[in-house]
Length: 173
Image (cartoon, one colour):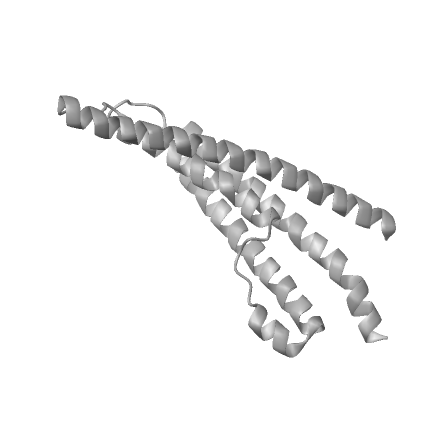
């Protein structure tokens, strides 16, 4: 059991480091897009015309930006938790409710990833309207990031099980 705990802890640490890097990349892309938006506003005010194709760039960047933050949210356990009920019912029930919430979130993310995969495959021949850039690379990158979020949530759930199991065993004896 101790060896598994070390592996789970190491996996959790690696997942946190990787998710921090992905979130940093997402923030960088978001800042680039914000800069392009500001430039578009400036060009519209000066020249009276928008930057050609900026809507297409948004179509390609936004899915990647949004999904790049999901692994970080999962590894930092920054999702919504129902702590009020668990606090009133005691630590063993709170631990089980947390585990149930982790499982429901994992199931939801898995279903969302599968549905997004179907959408990405169906959209593989589509292009953006103005630049005629293929949409598939952006969608498959977002799909990869969603898959990483599923893996991160699975690690969170396994780490939660391994942390809560000794406490529950002591309380049951």
